[in-house]
Image (cartoon, rainbow, N blue to C red; front, side, top):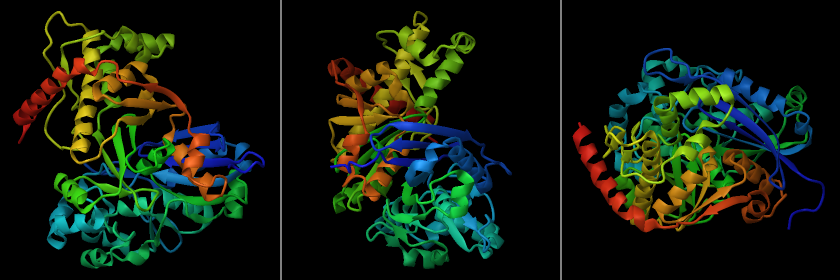
Amino acid sequence: MRQEHSIMYYMGIDVGTSGCKAAIIDCHGVVCAKSSRTYTLLSPQVGWLELNPATLLEQVKQCILELYPFTKDVTGIATCSIGESMVILDEHDAPVTNCISYLDRRLTATEDAFTRSIAPDQLYDVTYLPVSEMYSARQLLWYQQNQPEVLARAKQILPVCNYIDYVLTGEAAIDYTQASRTMLFDARTHSWSEEFARILGINLRLFPKPSRCGTLVGKIRPKVAAELGLNPNASVYLGGHDQPISTLGSGVFKRGEIMMGQGSTESMNYLLTPSSNDLELFKKDRVCLEPFIDEELFIVTLGQLCYGTSIRWFARAMEQDLLQRSQAEGFNIYARLDELCAPETNVIFLPYLSPVNFQISQAVGSFIGFHSENSRAELYRALLEGLCLESRRVKQILNDRNCRFDSVVANGGCTKSDLLMQIKADIMDCNIVTLEGREAGIMGLALLSAVSSGGYKDYAEASANMVHVRQVYTPRNNSQYEEKYQKYLRLRDAVLDVYAI
């Protein structure tokens, strides 16, 4: 049972690619205060996309200051962030250079050097990762080859969220989920791979020893507490990579459960304890397995990159008049689009406005099968259905690899649409569970703090008290979509073939 003393308050800090946010959540899951700030990626050269650590830190501090006076009562703090991006600090704890974003394209040139050193199969057997330019080891190789003076000045290297922890406490730490994004982490033993670091010439002494999410980092520095209005007795606990933390924040923490992030992208995060056969299948498919909060579990993430982005594109490209009216009159254009949506359509939309996460291709987005009598309302219906048909395809990929489920917890801004969630339940033929709060990352951090501080005995108890269901959408008539799904797959294969290089 929860301790019956005064209400406990926890603060979560979520640092993303284009902005950061912070919120204070009590032990009943109530959001007491929240704030957010935005910043922009820097592009000093074509293809380079960087983040300024000083800007990130300043915007995080502003978020915390905006939460005052609730910050005085916070007892636990945790931070999550994008993976891969690293803050390199010198002997004075000052950033040596900007962080390389996972969207950066300068690292392609390091692939040959990497694969000559470590074979892809060997890499996967240890790290559970496919070779990819996004991971941090490739960034360090780039510095070796192009800016060795950066590494020569390095005293410490930390992921973004752990850099924030370091500023708050003066203690350096890194969790398993962020360590795994470096491509230097042995997923079998939850420790650094000394062998890979030696082969690549990377000094592991620059990194802290990896620890479990929720591990105590330390107390707030007195000077920082005074500067930011924080409780000087507050404890900072290890957060992690935003995907596992968001999954936890959706109340998903057991083997066989799945969370579906419904934002600009769609991420389907499935929890499993991989067998050797599972690992061989995922290695063949080049699918990443990432450590979860429970050391026995790993998270498989599949999905589509252009999800909510596709809906925003439709509003901008197809409904300019309605968009302008919404801005002038103050109504929600997406709610209005749902109201105007056609009840059915024969048009099929392929949602490839950018390459999908699972299968990188040259396919492009397409409306197929429409004629002069089709309205924009039908095209909008086709777009929503196309997004959900792609979700079903990803579900089938998981099912074919023995990752089966009949219920999904959905979280994120797109869950505001009852129409989209019902179409998704119908097409995927499974229950879609939506939650009261949509800030899954912040809630996951609050759950971490609540359990780590002893406010709750485990994540089951914490989730039962803090994560609240808003609505469950059940499949109504999946059979009407069976033929359309098969047609979608045939059209997808044909378009992939046409645009293949």
